[in-house]
Amino acid sequence: MKKSFMGARLKRLREERGLTQAELARRLELSPSYMNQLERNQRPLTIPIILRINAELGVDVQMFSENEEARLIADLREALSETPAPGGITLSEIKNLAANMPAIGQALVALHRRARSSDERLEALAANLGNAAGVPSTSPPPMPFEQVRDYFYHRHNHVEELDSAAEALFLSEALSVGMVDQGLERRLQDRHGIKVQVETSHDFRQHRQFNADERILRLSRTLDAGQRAFQMATQLAFLEQAPLLDDLVNSPRLTSPEARSLARIGLANYFAGALLLPYGEFLAAAEALHYDINLLGETFGVGFETVCHRLSTLQRAGARGVPIFFVRVDRAGNISKRQSATDFHFSRIGGSCPLWNVYEAFANPGRILTQVAQMPDGRTYLWIARTVSHARGGYGTPGKSFAIGLGCDLRHAARLVYARGLNLNDPSAAIPIGAGCKVCERPNCPQRAFPPLGKALVVDEDRSQFEPYPTT
View 1 (tube, rainbow, N blue to C red):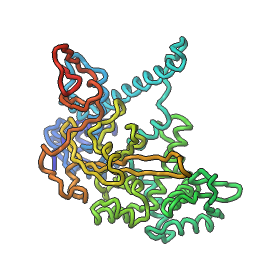
View 2 (cartoon, rainbow, N blue to C red):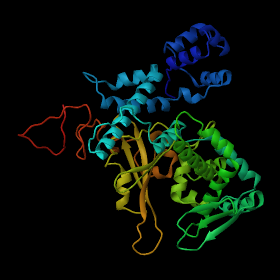
View 3 (cartoon, rainbow, N blue to C red):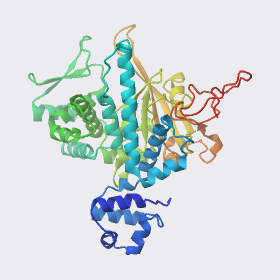
């Protein structure tokens, strides 16, 4: 196991609890000198000591996670690339800040995001007003969907309260894996007096519509059994988990009624996924089937995207699955969903990397593609990508098509069926990708769309080269 030196976090925790070094050492059954060495990063923080801290102080062990530090490093690199310091800021300096002063690092990231959000909104408003005077000087908060996205990112895309509630309901109703729709329809009728009605009219355009006065839940006939079960489970979340949903959205990260409403929908959908794919059974099946998405879909009676969503949530303390990140993009490169159970960083600016196999998936519809890809910081990941399509209506009616990408750190790749036949030990086999051209530092990328922020362009009328935007 890699040694973890996290003295600054340990000292901050001690000071927040109003404890002296000697007091904390006594509670953790350590000598004062050993405690002093831990705080000065002269000794690593071991797993047994972290577990003692958890038992004595009730602190989430995630506080000492290397993944958490890697997240902050990625966020700081993006923030500081847009506001470069004279002489530049090295990666080692950023790592030192993240390791020893994480609170200051998080504050810098928050300030950067607030400033960039303000700039984007002022530019949009100025364009709409034709650069008229009177543009407000104060910046509005992030958009509601941005707040919800960051809310789930902060929770590592895992909501234990909803997972536990869904598992309890699954057991109490004696539901059967892959055939949940029948049990949910029965519970809606028996517990709530709600009739489930499948609408056959082509004019019914919703997936789900609940009429509280008539006690009817209308579902589209275009939904298959798994999709109907998901919609019924979502409605049950609003009916039976309302107090828990209200408590969860009571977060300082959600600053508007719209953001809290969107978060409630997202959390209700999370509950639905947890009910159709209960944590314990799903994790056991995922490990037994080596995370084969198609086989998991057949086992639980749900589609490819639903399985991918669920795989990105398996971070229960003491029963963690492979830490997986999930992304959904369209043909234009817009990322409509991004969920990370770990530290992988999705850039908020500059798009994403065209060398990423998630874009190649559109040229191979329905086929699962694999890729070993390396980020500029040297971390290497296994990625899989596949398209999913949804259509309804008659001839000429536009449908929607997305590419789904799932990734994990290479050290976990051997647990996935998709690593078969890949050379995971050859660094030269990895495709170099980045988080987005504007924040990517790779100097010789032939696919670069923009010069990197903070770098001076080399402009030479007498030369032309294959790689665009050469920099100093």
